[in-house]
Length: 174
Image (cartoon, rainbow, N blue to C red; front, side, top):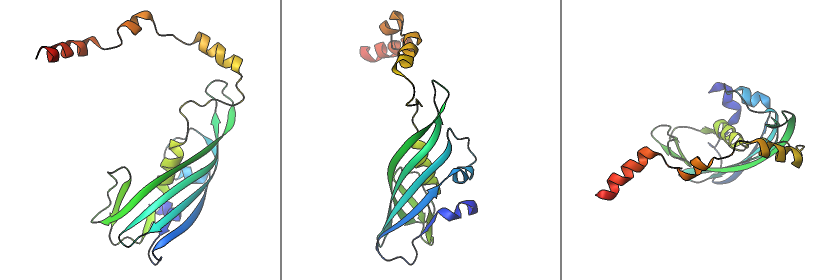
């Protein structure tokens, strides 16, 4: 966790109310995570708004910036704009627990909360499944669609699995 220390938001000593933090994210940030990236050359600004209450913390994390993606069709690099926002409630408890989607529990004696993983997840969720360059022409997309596999009549007729159909018949008899 030491390598992510730069992304600690220290709430100890802060007054109750709203506080803003800003992080500039580039490729060094993503190298801290030992995963393969689908993009290169990230240039991302992260605004973290902490709303400190007496018994819990509210974090609003906004990302905005550019990533360089590889087009799935033309295989050329292009800049893709990303913008996303997540909200997380941080409460205090016995031990760290992030099993709930929007609520994280941290130990009562912690004085800072590390937002690196939240930033990472926020960026990864902003990357589209289909990466299509804005430079791909409509003609290229039409040709691709023309030669893409189509659903056959047999697949259309019987979309459900016959094993499930047999189970449904048993259910209907009872």
